[in-house]
Length: 221
Image (tube, rainbow, N blue to C red; front, side, top):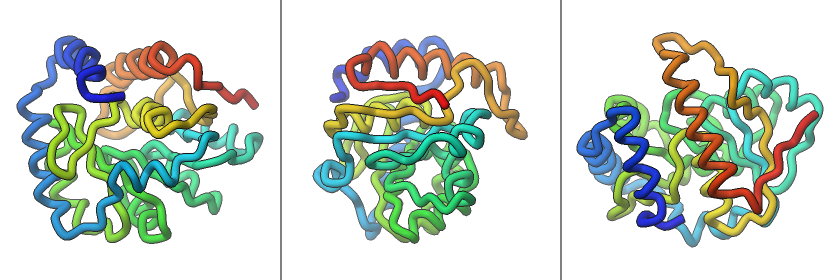
């Protein structure tokens, strides 16, 4: 998905949640500055890693159960907090899509073991970027939900889960399997308003199934 296609959705999200585009852009500029000297996995790098079959792991409350019943297929992409669960199971994802909201220690560890960290900038995670980014020593791909520039890219998507799906589609995946996705229930997280998360999941569902209907399959145990 190119930015001009994504921007139509992005503007609606900004309006609904009263997010600040300026703050998103400030965060993106910080990320672009801080990745100087880092190993950047540019789009041509991601294209080599994303195969035609992809499994995307969401951080839904059903993840642990589904991991017991569904085997990994193709390129493995984890959405933020799902990374810590995968690592405990001995599964190292090929790609992590994160806004640094989950267990950052597990993400840094996976990055050291070879996972590409697709690190996302938005208005609410400026401090997390500033604090955590220096510890990522492997390959990273910086992303933003506002207009891309420099070493910061935008493949579309809003939440970590749907951004992972849109990224897979952007790089040519023909079959995307969803594991640990629950669009109706959320994990309770300290300091997080679950009501807002539920509204975000409505957008995630819309982005995945309305923008990606030909390529998405939902795996059910």
